[in-house]
Amino acid sequence: MKLQENEKILKVYHHHTYFFVLRGIKIWLASLPFLFVGYIASQFFDVISQAYIYIAIFLLFAVAHFYDFMIFYLDTLVVTNKRIVHLDWVNLFKYVETQAMLNDIQNIETQENGFMSKFEAFDFGEFILETASTRTTIHFKEAPDPEGIKYFLYKLARKHNALQSPKARVENKNIQFQKKAESQLRKVEN
Image (cartoon, rainbow, N blue to C red; front, top):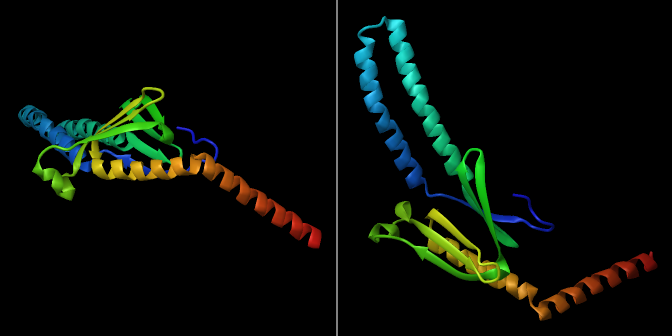
């Protein structure tokens, strides 16, 4: 993702850590049958070979857990002062980038399931943003505090649209003109 001119990153959202921890538990539970087979097979080998078997099993599942962590960390929803960008990593070598300009936001939906979503540790759900002009839809699953993201974007879009209104642009040009005139006046006085 390359930033445009005068663009600043305001917030970066990653998936909720609950899902990363849950997938990690599943990965390590999946290693148990392999460890059991390694235990049975190790009876036929010496101590050094047994150590190699357990190290190989551990490394295999450690790499799987690291891979899951990289996807978790890289898959983000980035909010800038001009747009929203979703970097959806399919695997470590391929990602899909979807972006929506702040002034194009048409609708934001959030979905949170169950009463557990009222607790901060389990406050996650789906975040869906739709735009009017390009018919772009950003779908960010496993979003942390989707309602918080929604209200932050509404507030940011309202502020952005107020700055983009014709009256605000005229006022901004007047301020720039006044600053330029003051700086030129200072140069003449010196």
